[in-house]
Picture 1 (cartoon, rainbow, N blue to C red):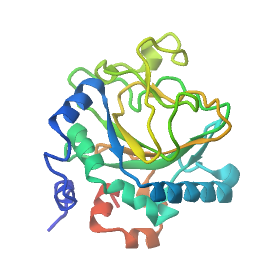
Picture 2: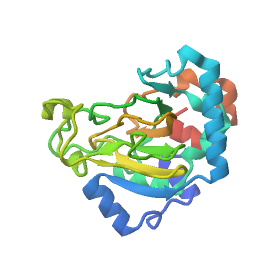
Picture 3: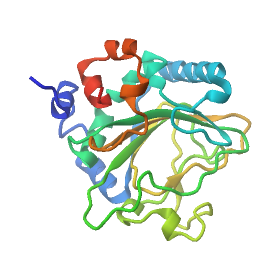
Picture 4: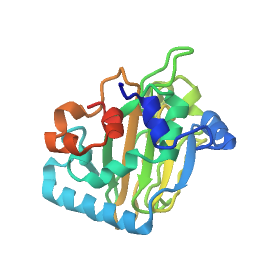
Length: 254
């Protein structure tokens, strides 16, 4: 019997009650949803220590598998670097959000991390997909897991509620995507908490005006027919694939 995404969701306890009707409506209308605290304080510390360790080992090569960014420390292919990251992909509320947007036609595109450095981190408003054609289905969604508190001062991610329904990309619709937007809000959340987004929503990091990095982990999903941001078949070692559960192999498409 071939295991499919619908079987994965069932085995992990994802059902119609994993998100409330109100949460689904908020996700539909606003384009984002606060999932609450999904990691304990102990887990947050463990993830933070792991991110620091990997960043120190990789140095200038950090993030090169996918993307490097001035003003931020990026890490990529982290599932291959520590098994602790596997847990992020198995949370029922996360997967319920993915299912709500993409149905059972999804896979992990990448699990990356980003640490906005002091005095840096502002991004242009962007969506994680190009312009959608009329009546075209949504193609991507993302969860941002806060390793540090997201505050106004350290540049919590800005969002334009409802912009996922515009069908437009900010680079085309706005004169200056770097500028403040009159409808923007900032997603201030505590460490260990997670914000889930329809990744067509316009969003971007803000400037970190504190003296500490703002660290986050990103679980980014796409429809199964699309090329992954990180080709897991190419980058995951045989040892890593061998330790993965059947559910994770389906989610990662390996």
